[in-house]
View (cartoon, rainbow, N blue to C red):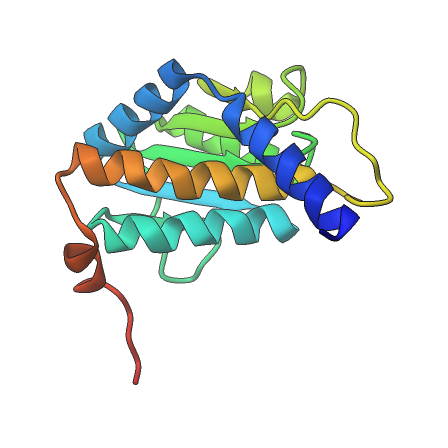
Length: 177
């Protein structure tokens, strides 16, 4: 196997698996209990958040990407999910502060539990990856891959919670051809 692929597979699996069952269950409750879900991240972290948004739409959840022109204002009792490796990205931290002031419940995914984002959030999901070999995983690759792996495995939790199967999700899939 390619050494970079082997390294990333192992490291991302270990990091995604470090999220506790309690945090997974709490997040599933938050998604099901809130009127709307708002997701935001910058750069590659934002792309990972967008991938979660697609699956939430397919589950029938009212989800929006912060910053899009058609996104409504975040409201009280909504859920805001933010993704930032460092937890210091200004636009993400500002979003947490604004959403929190409005009364939205803010969940962040970050690698730094002492970051500004963590302090501005109601729930902090720390992606614990330990030392990173940047020869195989530069610039947050392990964080982004781990969050994506967690989100995709979390969709299975939500499918069970909502008693939804792939056929139901497929009926909400944006098929253009």
